[in-house]
Length: 139
Image (cartoon, rainbow, N blue to C red):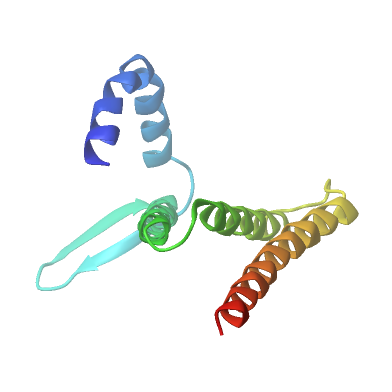
């Protein structure tokens, strides 16, 4: 995985100016700043309040990727795909609910969420039934 990501870095070279502009925009944003008092020193560090959210997002993405990598070693690929689809559906619902979903067709949103969950539950139940039938045939 390291080589896969490391070797992809040169593809970002053409976008370096845009990426640097985005970094500057985040660091100089007009959002309120957070002050961090350094213990054992008479120093204070101020940084835009968007940085803790960015850091939290990065850490949760790291946990998610690590979990998916661990999951791929334990279950079939279709199960991994369904778990990721459910995660994306939950993330979509949270995003719409938390960040002004005023222009969202709620019936479509909840219908889609229901279908994703129903399909995943159907897959999980059918897998258990198949395993049970195989055990019964062996006995």
